Image (cartoon, helix red, strand yellow):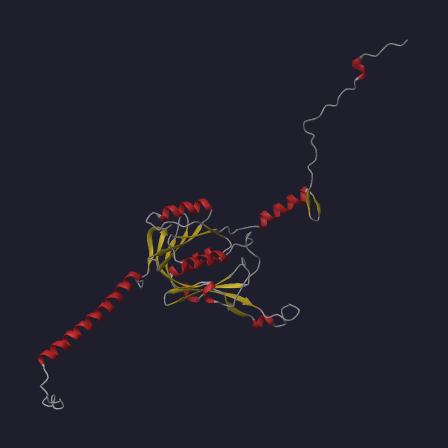
Length: 320
């Protein structure tokens, strides 16, 4: 009878795992199949090397309390035209609004702001601000017409990127050059923004007339044939159809900081709407005073020059 083996001899020695050995990483799956890691790293490094400046502009759009319906419609139109903007709740239009808005801009991760401030339910002021270091511009907004009010025939794709055009007189003075750069940064939609469409089917037109900036929005219309393709030579027949909104910006002051700071430029031709209304009241009061003076003069003339008695006044009276 043979000898039994010991228990230790029957157990096979367990293989020792090395710390350096690990399971290979699973390749990334794409729509076209499995993607190798080396190819992904090569594409990523190529993208990083090719990408230079990337526009990450974000605009906060808000308004003051007790704003009228017409000006609220204008603000909502601007929100629909700028897919890279962020809308926030109303802010009280007080002397401390600058600190509040700067904090809101920081919380929203924005670097620009369009603040619509309404006063006396009549006057609309627009602040265009670059935060946190400035500059900032204060405009008086006039000749406001919203999209819904004008009943215009133009209609473009929502979220598409606009072409920005400026009149040639934006390059004549330093303050107009600064305003042109600010308008370009605020109204220019960043390329490849997640909410924008990769099309250019409308134009933002900024033109200076009588020291005012006039804004227009036009749809680019190209004639199509029955097969829904651009006809031969159709680009020569391209037309512009106005979409809206319309408004006019009268620059008041340009500040070095955000919502304040040293004054870089002050419009010498600006007249406050309160002064205009006061002058109209004085003119109306002057007209009323002239009427009162004319009536008094007429009475004094009648008293100083009485009519002579008429000798034929009682001629046709019946004798009693």
